[in-house]
Length: 205
Image (tube, rainbow, N blue to C red):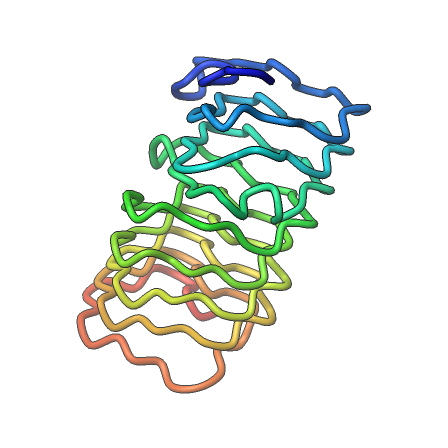
């Protein structure tokens, strides 16, 4: 992909790109270091895509762009900083089983809904700029062990549901905890939420 600055359409759910959607034979992509945007559904269901080389700098991702790319490696983003387009652009890395971590831009203020649902994420360093976690953002991330939530004030429904190996949670800034956020797993250690004002139904079921 030579000298391209964007792949697919930049925008919300109705602004569909579908550029390589369902290209199941696609295994590697060499991207221009000028690439700054990957649009909606651009690589969705490319379930043999293993690596994208050449990504450099801040890359803005839109909804479903890597949904169900379950062989995609973390090394694809080693020189990039991932910026999410908006909070409603979900499923960006959902079902990416081989993805263990991604570097996030300090310009992010949120994690979109279902962004990492059912992915292979193990650890994630959230920039201090992130204050909200969307609904189901990390649901069914069975490999997730640690995540820093020190500056997060709002966590949406089921955001960490079924994350059975999550061991360390710091919630010192949290004010709103949605429904079923930590359902079906045990938090180990002390839970410290001095600013919490709202707890949703079934949050600690």
